[in-house]
Every structure is written in structure tokens, then in C-alpha cells.
Length: 383
Image (cartoon, rainbow, N blue to C red; front, side):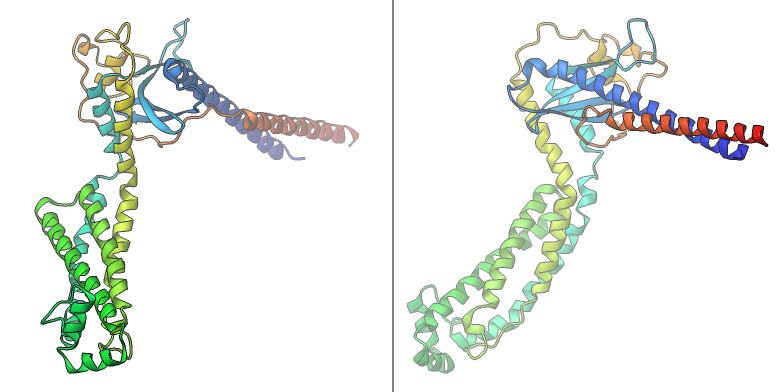
């Protein structure tokens, strides 16, 4: 066994041990955070409901959303605290429910800005009006020709009897009517579908004008989603109408269904991109409602205390020092934040099983190294 091989094994052992200790420290920190958050919310936790905590950072300060059965309820400030011996290396934490609605909104809106801005998500909305116009253009010639053949260009049918009257205004339609007594009902269905598409197209044109004047927004995206979905259904019904099927009065109309499908696909992509942002909006409303129901606090933190220092800070305190001490005594203010988002995942107490396995592997490797060294020395002695 060469000395270089032993050296490599020794380095591997040291690295594995360092990883094990780092994991253990991370588990201890997670446990300390869970303990602080649990203590802060224990009094208000609904009986029998599972608690979860979603941690995030604003201006370097850590916050957590406490939820029960996955329903967001409270926003908490989470900060490290010194150990009793003033040690700077500590895994102790303080957590406090933020009760002020204005502060909750500021913190949470700062968090929401860590998601893509709505305007950035919705750039494809500008593609929707041209797609709608393309579909509408595909209707014009085919429907106009069919309406003339059915007689509904002169007398739009709003009932089966009215449709029969319209049909008898044209030679071709009256001939088909003599062979097909159900033609008036088929004409009525076609007429209703095209009328519905006319209404939806008017709605989409209005949305396009609003988009041009006001710009993209999440409510406007929802309106486009609703209208395009209805247009997709109505156009499918119109395309399958009996009166424009092969062998009937009208020839099939070449509706540009692909344009409608493309519009629907773009809307779906934008909705997916905006889902995180919209979920945060919903969570904020839920948190404000749940917090408003909390009983009055017996003693609020004095200005300049833990909560206010954290919210006035633009960065985490360095080397255990206080941040923005000059703000003591002022009302809490959250500056326009530059977000440093943390993954929005529930914080869970880590299981030490993985750490135990790593330690056992480290011991096995150590034993192997010792055995190899002994064997090598014995071999040299025999030689």
C-alpha cells in the first residue's frame, strides 16, 4: 500500500466527517427555527390541524408564514438570539407574529415582487388580439355564403318556425327542407352558435382595446381566458353544425381553429407563469383575515425592539451587531426592498438518520484505513 493511497483515504475521511458535522449543524438550526415558530403560534394553533412554516427573506431578514392544514394564517418575524453565555455561534431563535396589517402588506408585497413581475409574465397577451382577428377573418366568407343559401341573411331565425320561413326564401334551402323536416332545428342551432361567436368576438375586441390602453394585467388575463374558452367551444359547435356538413345546404366552413387553439395555449402558459404570484395574493388576504381575529396582545414590543429593528433594517446584522439602531423610537418602516428570495418550501425538522449513516460510513472507512496501515507495517516487518 503506497503512502499516497493512505493520504487520499485520510482526506476522504476528513471530508466525510466535515459533511456529517455540517449536516448536523443544519439539522440543529432547522430544529431551533421550528421550535421558535411553534412556540410563537402554539397559543393560536387550531386544535388537530397540522402546522407548516414557509420561510423567506426580505432585505436579508427572515420571515415565515405559519399555516395550518396548508392554509396560510400568520406572518412571523424570525431572528437569531444570543445564547445565555453571549456566544455568537448559536442555533437559538426568536419568532414573533406580526400583527400590524400595514407591515404585513409591505413585507408580503416585497415577497411577491421576488416572483416575475406581472407585466413580464404577460408579454404574450399582445399576441391574443391578432389571433382573435385571424379567426374572425376565417368566418366571414364561409358564413356569409351559408347565410345567403339558408335565407337567414334576410330573416335571421330565432325559432324553428322563423328558420323554416327563412329557408323557404331560397330555392336551394326549400328543396332540402322538403327532404329534411329537421332542417329548421339544425338551422337554429347553427344560427345560435354564430350569434354566440359574434358576442364573444365583440367582448374580445373590447378586451383588446383595454389591453392597448391600460396594458397587461392579471384580471385582464382572466377575462381573455374566459372569452377564448367560450369561443373555442362555440366555434367547435359551429364547425360541426349539420347544415354545413357534407351533403347539406352549405359547404363546410374553413374556421381557423388553430388560431383559437394558439390563443388558448398562450393564455394557459401565462396563467401557469402567474400562478405563484396569484397564490401569494390569495395568501396575503388569508393572513390579514386570520391576524385580524387574534386577541389583543397584552404587551406589544416597544418601538426599537426586536420586531422594529428587523423591519427597519436593510440587511442582516453583521457579527451579531444591531442593525439601524438609529431608528429606535421611530415607527416601523420597510424600505423599498431588494429581494433575496429563499425557496418557498415548508421548513421541516430534519431527520438525523442521514447524518447517522454518514458517521457510520466514516467509522468504517477509518477502520479500513487503520487496518491497511497495520497490514502495511506488518508486511514491511516481514520483509
